[in-house]
Image 1 (cartoon, rainbow, N blue to C red):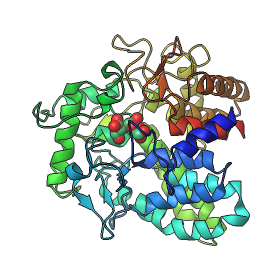
Image 2 (cartoon, helix red, strand yellow; image 1 turned 120 degrees about the vertical axis):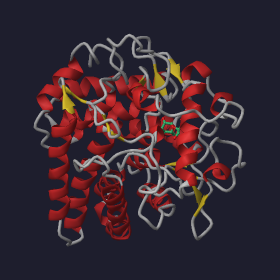
Image 3 (cartoon, protein in one colour; image 1 turned 30 degrees about the horizontal axis):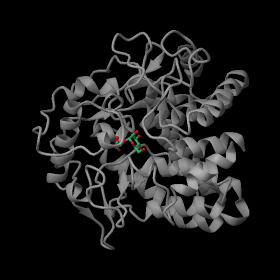
Image 4 (cartoon, rainbow, N blue to C red; image 1 turned 90 degrees about the horizontal axis):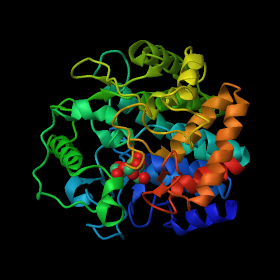
Length: 413
Ligand code: 2M8
């Protein structure tokens, strides 16, 4: 099984990074690269380091890590929105997008170091200041809500593009006119598995507005600004990882620990409701009453005070952990649950990996082992699919998907 997973990563390797999927996503994606490094560290420590360092070469002077670093060798219109849409070019000519993705990179760097400490201190030295700058960008430029949590300004920044939690805030966005752009994703995946055209038009409009304001967080009149529990939980886990990295490098870990503690308090105070974490719409000030897998990801936060209640929700009727395949992306009891459409119901391997990590942290070894076994069976039987139906295990989206393969290698190791 692991050999097949290694082969997937080899086929998707470009020489310095790994594309999520040759056809659907032919460039380097931010949080994909972090998950991929977590698997690659067991195959080649050098490749895992290169994966993360190549992404950090696309970091902007303001500290943000863009969600896509475009490969110059790929046709400019192979993916939409491509480099001509984003119009973001670094001094060395690297072309990128202008939005971000969940900050799991410091955790990936720490796990990479742990796989081979003797060969990784130089790597930590090189990337620590960049990771600090990345978190600094989020802390200084993205805390619009006033409670200390970081806000995303585009659904793509959540990594869970068409999550039902975005329906309410997105309703206030007028879509870019039909015909003003051409989708490329539906050339490679079934339309019924992907976001609707209406949602896509809204994504394009939001990104164009941000671009037309120079990607300035204060300058842009954001029509979408949301505190997402997954994004903030991964920032907390990554701050804990930065504390560990700082200790190895002989720096002061305490600022990282203090920031992680403050964020954890804010996360619980601002987003925990009805046994789960919900997203807060910064513009209306309201919590969004759609329960998605993002609300379970804080299980990865060390010392989470509401972990027992959150675990009960994962096991309860909304997600039925242990009774469905992996963990569904959306509340099973919601009337608009859709088992095949992207982030509106199907199960994903990266979120299952995160929840598995949370279960291990909580010493829930029985649930963790069952989830791990399900993960490994499904990864192989579905051809390392991107996502799957939580009842029938029918594969959806791309095959030979990199983070599915990488996280398989990690859970096998
Ligand atoms: C999906 O998102 C991209 C936009 O970033 C897309 O739909 O075109 C999401 O699943 C996201 O989480 C992932 O990072 C990306 C590449 O795998 O694909």
